[in-house]
Structures are given as C-alpha cells and as structure tokens.
Image (cartoon, rainbow, N blue to C red):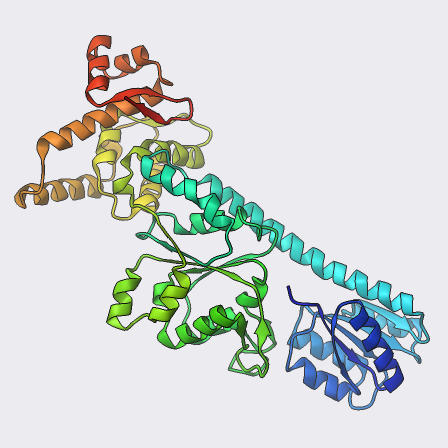
Length: 463
C-alpha cells in the first residue's frame, strides 16, 4: 500500500526541514517547496493527499496555493500555517475550504495530531466508499442463482480462486453473469476490505480509457482540468475488474502489460512511475485465443491475464436453473404479488435456446410482469417474438437433420419431473398430482431417469 503523500510549502528553511523530518518519521512520503510558486508547480506534477502551506510567502501566498490545490486535485486536504495570521485569517482559510489552520510558533505534538486527524479523515472517506461498494457487490453475489451441476461446479471453485492473488480471466457469452463472478471473487478474497473497481473497456475511446486506467496530470490533454488518480491507483491492494478486455486497443494493451508485469505505471502527462499491488480480474465474451491468432490481442498479455481461467456456461447448457431464475426475477420485479408460470409456459421457456442468456431471460420476465395482471402466466403471455424464434429454431434443426426427437422428449419429461419435485418440496405424492400422474407411474418415471429424491436446498439426488 502506498504511503500518504504530503507536500510542505514553507519559505523558512529550518521550519521546512523540521516538518519534513517529523512527518517522515511518522511514515509519510514527504516533498517540500521553498515558496508558493514552487509549491504550485509541484502540485501540477503529482497528486498529494495533504498540503501544509505557510500563508505569507514569496511567489504566491497560502490562499493562492489553497485555491490552486482545489482546482488541480479537489480531494487534497490543505492545512494553513502562519506567524502573522489572526483568528480572522484562520476563519477565512476554513471558509475557502482549508482542512485546518495553526499559528506559529506551535508544538510538535500539535502538528502531529492535526496531520493524523487529516489522514483519518481521508481514510474514513475511503472506507465509506469501500463499504458502499462492498454492500453493492455483496447484493450482487446473492444474485448468482444456480443449482445445476454446471453452476455448482463453478461456484465450488470460486472461494478457492478468491483466496489466491493470481490474475483471473472470466469467459462466457454475453449475459451469463461474468461481472457477478468477478464481484464474488473480490468479496471472498483477502482484498475485500479494499476497493473493487470495475471498468468496461468497450465503453470508452482509447484516450479516455487510458486516462481512466492510469490517471492524468492537469493540462496533459484537452479537458484535463485537474490531476486525476487512475483506477489502477484507486484499486491498490484491491481488485481491478476489466470487463470486455477483448475490446481494448492494441496500443493500450502494451501499457496494461507493463503495469501487470512490473506493478508500475505512469499517469498520462506524468514524469514519474507509480507502484501498486492490484489484482486483475478480466472478462470477455470473445475467444481471446482466436484474437491472438488474428493479431488483435497480444499473446503475452493473454498469458498474463489467463493465469486462472473461469468459464461460465451459457443458459442453454444449464436449463435446470431456469425455474430458480424465474422465481428470483419474479421476487425482484413483483415482490408484493404471488406470480408463477404454468407448466406449459415453463416448458416453453426451458426448451428455448436463450442466445442472450440470463440477461435476456430477466428482461423478458420484467416485461411480462409489467403487462400481465394474472397470477398464472401462460404461453399466451410470452412475447410473440420468443415463440416465433423458437419455432424457427426447431424448424431449422429438423431441416438440418440435427434433432433427436426421442432424446428431446425425454429431456423435457425429466425436467418436468424435477420441477414438480421442487414445487412440492420433495413430496412425491404431491408432485405426481401436479403432473396429473398416478403415484405408481410417477415413481416409475423417476426410476427411469435415475432420480432418487430432492434435498431441501433443491439438489437432485440420483440413483
């Protein structure tokens, strides 16, 4: 973790050296300037957590320093010091946004306490931001729904991967929930007390993406009106989530590679390297190996990111999760009403391919609940384009000779048996009634598919 960065601006040499030695002894990183003009110039070259400045100085006075500090780096705290000030000047400094002020001569312990309080204020602000992000992310973890074998296998490895500090590459089609897995990896990791910082690499043009990742100095490009920390810096000791990494321009990939390999980077327009300890979790719906072959993604960067690969299966490969997802989305969008899909509608949804995956399913449920008043949702309530697309897909499969009707019907029958067991809480008698079957026939079908029972958690036990 980087030390707090403090700038001392004081024209009296002895005072400047005493303050520097004191604060360095407290474990801070300290820089100094001999007058206001030099101090303002240094503010433009680096980002400081705290500035301690005299008020009456050659070059520029302390109020000018305060104003420039606020314009260049609004998060920087400023403490004013003067031997000539009055209570009125201190009040004026506070009104202008100074954190605190103190008169010379002062006691060493007085400066030490004021600086510690300032650092506590900065730390508290950071912890509040981290807590907000953690609460948001923890809510997202609750949205990872899955009892299917594929999802259980995936979720079983998440805590193990989270405990490691290696970089992770999460792959999967659009809408499968890659960002939820990334948030879970952070919240279950030893880094959970620090920042989790997500960014979509496809949402910004190259120059702005570089500035977001690495920060910039005031005046380094049009619109850079003050110094800005980059996300790499903000995520120090925490996690940086690079979503849609496959969309990152080649030129920026080389800078990202250097930051990952060396743990160092340079702000846009900056002249010095900064060192961080940031874990990278990247995600993509692209085949990065193919992108490497096509020359659109660096092979060395791919290997640096793909230390631990995690693949999220598409919804069509985990259809057993659809009933659980439907219940979750109904609770989310219609919490005050008991709504459910009929067996026929559920069968239609479970046999659909869902090219947009969970995101498409969620959007569909939200739309249906908005326009349907009845508690029982039937096939007639499903969007017309969904049923038309499903019919088109089935026709194409038959036309291509790719459909095995016997296997398809068996798969549908098995899914209904499992769902009836879930609905009845594992009671086979009640489950048989839901399907309109005799208990003997129901038991025979369970035996046919090797289904023994269902646990209270919804896990299928097989024979």
